[in-house]
Image (cartoon, rainbow, N blue to C red; front, side, top):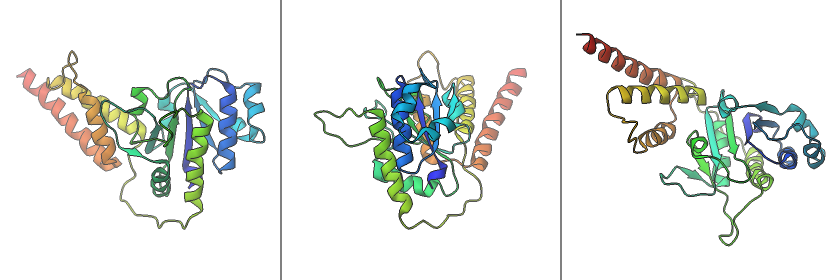
Length: 243
């Protein structure tokens, strides 16, 4: 289970926090760390704060975009403490762990953590199938990023040592994050072509469609069907315009 869980830190500003996250991961059996455009890494402070988890830092993958970090992932979760204008499916850390336990039987899972000051952006949160919120005192609910990772990692570890679940068969693999982004780009292009989506007044349409399709958990065959429908629509538009 834990080998198929990827912790993704986005635009982390303080290298000490990266080291503390590595330590939190190692204590709970996690090892796959991706760093998206860290402001300072590698850095001595990261190694100092990692204690005996420097091997996690040595093996960390540094990329420049979220797309690169999620390329092969089929289940993506974003951590967020804020309420959204458009509600998104939300899991508690414990419910997340049980969901991840099932997903990691066959899929690569990514859990996203945003920069310390502002967390994940709206665009980053819209890449996620679910959001996870850590319950905390309403009087002071701000968690250090390493503390947040530690809580999520603890729940994942506890779930991993419970009785393993039987693998559920599915005829096709689930669509990856990269697949989903290609679908959303294709869908937006078609909706603009048929004048259903007006870029001058989008009305959060694509955000709602993202939520719909991410909640559905498309597999690769379903993805191909939808892309085929969109391509057929484009072909019909081109044919009618040429008449």
